[in-house]
Image 1 (cartoon, rainbow, N blue to C red):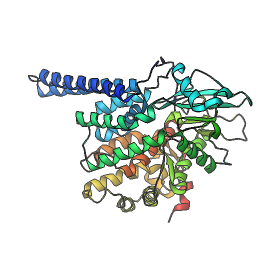
Image 2 (tube, one colour):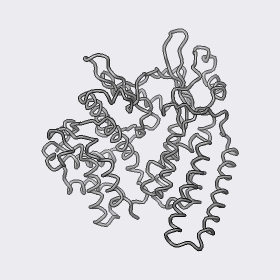
Image 3 (cartoon, rainbow, N blue to C red):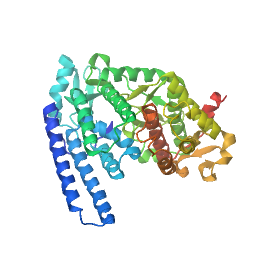
Image 4 (cartoon, rainbow, N blue to C red):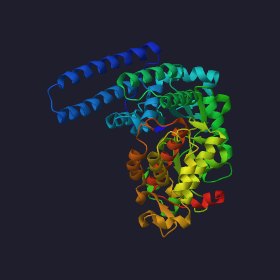
Length: 460
């Protein structure tokens, strides 16, 4: 859930199917007219001038569509955000850049618009609460308001889904897909169909707060007794499919100056705690929180030396369960990275469903990419292979100094962007999303970790 910024509240949501389709039909017509105008205007230009004109035009068009989608909020923004996450694989750079602007589409909805909906969902129990009208968090599907239970004084939060969002998911998916087809921004392939179906399933899951409440309870059980983690308590009697009441869990953003000011040792412990959650999800629990953005985690800084700083996990709407076969593939890929073994990585990749159709050159490039992606997990004896700047005193991986993000971005263009991998297969989409998010956290923390300490128990 994104942090609220001082932005103007929206007084009304366009939630009906007719309203949303009319808005997008207008956008589509505008896009079509601009395409025709751009084509006519470039008839007598040089090849270089045409390319520059087209690049600028595509960016302007993408920004216009993003603006229209952002005003509609709801699942369309969420769909666009998820597409942006993988845009480097299949969108023109200008379109991917524009879609990333949706990450900042966090204008709150005016409380007067939400209060009747809150009362309807809570029924007579709405009288139990004193609700702060200013949201403490906003996102594409919902916003969060702090409240107090009058009878007990307990501080809670109300996660309120925007009215009409759940009902609009299917139509929004259809409209978004039509826009992609109309603009020829994505190849209409089997891989795309599978990706889009997975996206649809996740969207329906995210708008059902009873499902999210169950996931929150499970993850609370997973980490129970471990002082490094905190998960909100669900107030079942007040929660419904579209409104969830949870305990208020204070903390600061991972990007906060107070976190940056922590000692290296404390930031290392936080970094290793984030990695351990990811390993537990893949090696033990069999399900994963696949939306690791900054708004879904907080850091609770300890005031005493005898208690660790806590990682507060807030949002469990994007939980993805994996079957045993896919879990084994993911585990084998990680352990091949642990061993720093190219042949072992090729063997692990051979169980991926899209692997057999790839030529040897692409397989080799992908194996190299995966070895780079998993180098923070290399066992201690393999560390001498890594550049000295990546490793502190031969034992701790230095996330910021390694520049892993930029190196992965460069190598992915050669290894992944090809006709064999033009759309991320659904089998790896959500896992890769998790890794990207965790790697970002580690880099921001400037953490130095020893992931091999956890993985060595799984070495064969």
